Amino acid sequence: MTFIFALTEGCNVGRPHEQLAPVFIGSAITALICIIAPLTQAGFNPARDFGPRLFAYFAGWGKVAIPGPDNGFFVVYILAPIVGGITASLFFRGVIQPLMESGKKNASDCR
Image (cartoon, rainbow, N blue to C red; front, side, top):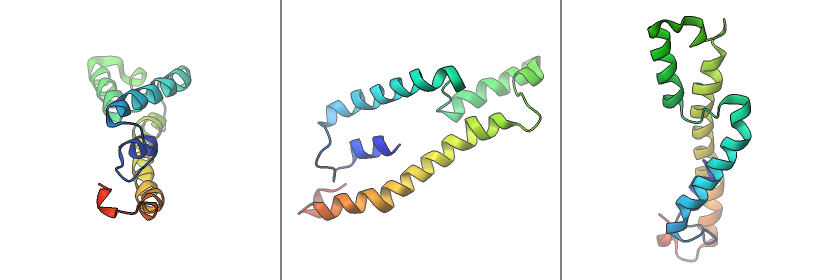
């Protein structure tokens, strides 16, 4: 998320052209999926993970769809991406963005 914020923030003087941002974001997600998928199935989007699990649970798959006695899948695939996104946005808005704004001569250029 911090990478996405940095690529789309108007105050970032080192960001690539706006039309290249999706290419860099897609490349970063592709690299992360290649690294993380063998371990965790790359559950970046909680809606894409929980929806199929819920459907499979009600379709009769039971413990296979929602495994574990402590529902660890909830922490790893649902709670962690949400908390990580919120933490990244707070870090960006509180630390990185003020640094970028202080480096700009004209603060009105910042979105």
